[in-house]
Picture 1 (spheres, each protein chain N blue to C red):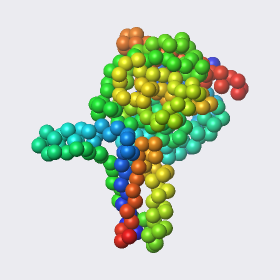
Picture 2 (picture 1 turned 120 degrees about the vertical axis):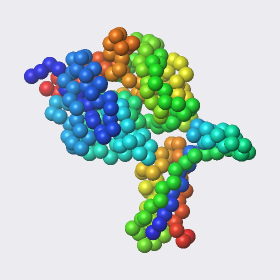
Picture 3 (picture 1 turned 60 degrees about the vertical axis):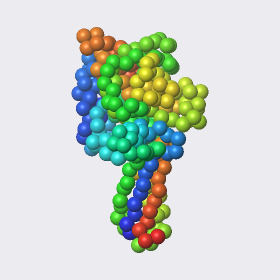
Picture 4 (picture 1 turned 135 degrees about the horizontal axis):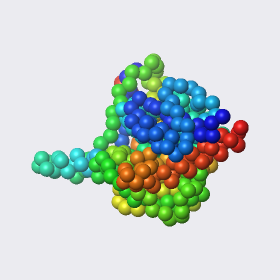
Length: 231
Length: 80
């Protein structure tokens, strides 16, 4: 049996960061497998699931609104309910919000611009499996590239999430008008996490930053723990 | 039954698209105090009664056509 934990990277029509995510996870020690959205089961021994960036179903209606009906999403929902680690990046984050697996919603950026650059982020919470390799308050530099990444929650929801420690990542600079500068949130059980920045594009200093590897390596660790605890 | 759904950004929610439209209209010389941009969905619902159609479309809005966190919706049933 391979010691590389299996991570399923979902592929929707319009996904375009699936290969980058799979490559980065592979480089960090995972057995990353691309999985078409029309499948209705995750591969055997899946230790984590990644919903990658892109423009699933052409962003019709609202970003992520249609992808939530993909057959594979039922399996992902069951996996998440069972405690499995699920990471949504950019469009994957939008899908998880629309599917109700994460709180809030991603709106059009405040300035209507497609923001495509490196941004500085601050790690607010390290008590998640996704940020376990980071230090509290650590600054990360990871690129964003989105037109609809302005996260929104009303005051009640925001206050509840902050009190519960679910606001995991914030922008350390002005980015897109997100409420509270939130860049990434997790669910109450802390096993589902979504963020707008792209850690898979920042896994090698040669590409500008290696900070994304801190998040993805933690996911590989979590997948490993789940796979071998279950074995 | 023909039903039209109007989806709007909720009151108090920033609508950058509407702001951009308002600015552009001003540049054309129009005096516009405010603009909000939403979405319109025309539906043909297989349902003979207008009451039944309205109830169905209400559910469609809650489950898919609008995101209740940021959008409000209005349903117009033809002939009512």
